Length: 362
Ligand code: TTP
Ligand code: MG
Image 1 (cartoon, rainbow, N blue to C red):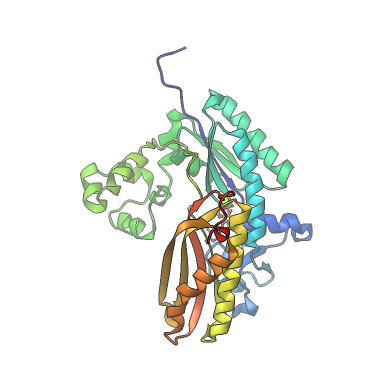
Image 2: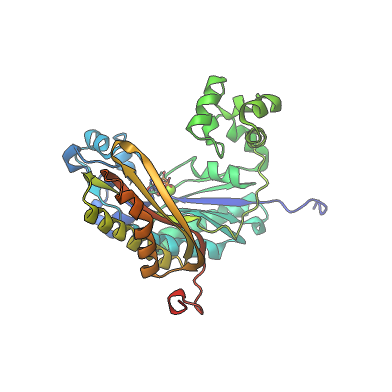
């Protein structure tokens, strides 16, 4: 045994398959086999808003996350269209995360349906693969849900691997095969590459990770500044970020698009209240209090604004959240314009402060 080597890192990325749609299928088995689309009401093709997610049967019709719901309806008129039930998904997510947490050496939640697990104590990729298979079966057995798992020497590779064979896949990429695995992937698979960077890379003739690896450090730095360094490393499968147990959910938010643009202040206020209520339920389910509160509006014509406040102390009180949200929104009402959307989100999350409930101290 080469005792002087640092212990090899083994990281899992677990990502639930078509999460919201899978939860809906689980709640209502008669949906099995049908295309299920979770999102705004399509209203026979004239509805506004977007698809949150859909199951794999619906993806066959070309429906996917973030597609306008009207277009989804054109592509899949016989699908089952459901409104999202965020509090339910949040509850299920909490239970899945607990199960994953228990299996990991170090655990980092990365979103409502994904997490990183440091599994270095497995020692070998063989053991890790067996552990991943057990974990996937446990999620199926305990929660009746399907997930995909990527196993790799770091978070970057694990994340790309979990997406490699969806749904229900397990992909393990051993250190010496990392480059061969990454090379054919699109450059957009690298962390931090959004539509703009992807476009610029394409203009430079860089469409794949292999091509990205062919670009010099100087070129990448010139084009992308400090992010160029990260791209250079990522293209080589280098990612030293530890699985970080302190990484909290960064924010919780809800937004609602009106059926038709509206200047009915009472309706907008009521909708904001609804958003606040759902955000608070999500906060409680996941044991968060919050310090920053944000109200976002979109006026007719798509112009979007937000206003934010930071409280001195974190709160979980519905009354506090409600009144803060309404005062944040007030200036928007004074503009006399029509609203297309209103939303509420909270950030700077912390565990509830049970001994010091804010409302009893003011
Ligand atoms: P994803 O993991 O990106 O998608 P997914 O789980 O639905 O499908 P996949 O099998 O490809 O992983 O997102 C997790 C959940 O987050 C998803 O079920 C719904 C929600 N979501 C949105 O509401 N809007 C979006 O644009 C995306 C991408 C996801
Ligand atoms: Mg998913």
